[in-house]
Length: 73
Image (tube, rainbow, N blue to C red):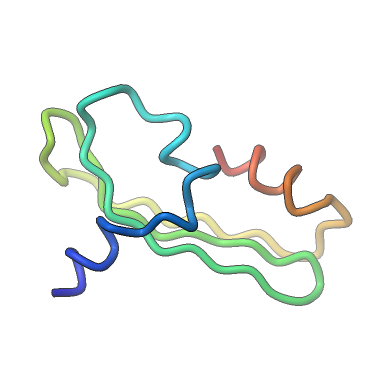
């Protein structure tokens, strides 16, 4: 069930989803917080199969949310 929820995620569109080639599988969950924090965890891979786990977390940034999204993508 968790992977289904993560695969249906629409909030993280400007992050990893925006940079992946067509046909790649992605199930992800993103978050943001105080002090310029931004993060994402994702299962992704080519050929529609999740073969990799990616975790990105940044904090202490003075960048805008759009800038932090571009940094992750």
